[in-house]
Image (cartoon, rainbow, N blue to C red; front, side, top):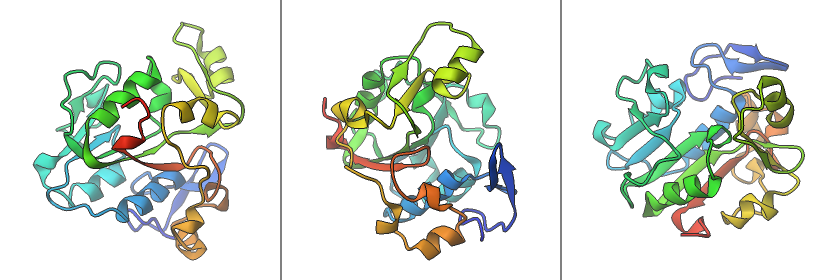
Length: 231
């Protein structure tokens, strides 16, 4: 097995998940799956990209594919990304000033569960910012149970219990995807990475079989501008 992002052959444990974090670039199984889907897109020097909370390994690869001026990386806390000194500040609860039809590709992984405002607001504006043929490629962590959110100060213990992590404000439940998130986005009826990649390719990139199918913490969604129901 080999990291398909940086080429490293060594992997470390991540909490209870054994040998999933790349020792060199820090990629996780979901990051390597996201990179496989990114490689399927026709990214050129003219592709305008917004990458939220950029992962270092993906950042290092993507910046070689498009012109520097077309690759925008952004986060609520830009200082957390010392490897990307050009990282801009973005507040996903305050997006009115970001231009419409600006990006051909918007990328993010495990971001929306941190955003402390109406999720419909954030998704609406991200899709508004896409070009007519743009792609929103993202990973939203789906967990067992139903959708839940809370913006109140409920303490770390309660946040971990309800949302899985003390800096999360919501839980995307796998039991009611189409009754909640599916009311905002035209989601696929299922996710099966083996319809896009061979098992050999997935195994070689150290993407375990529990990431291949279903709505889970590593499901990759490929959405178009018009897949936002409210737009």
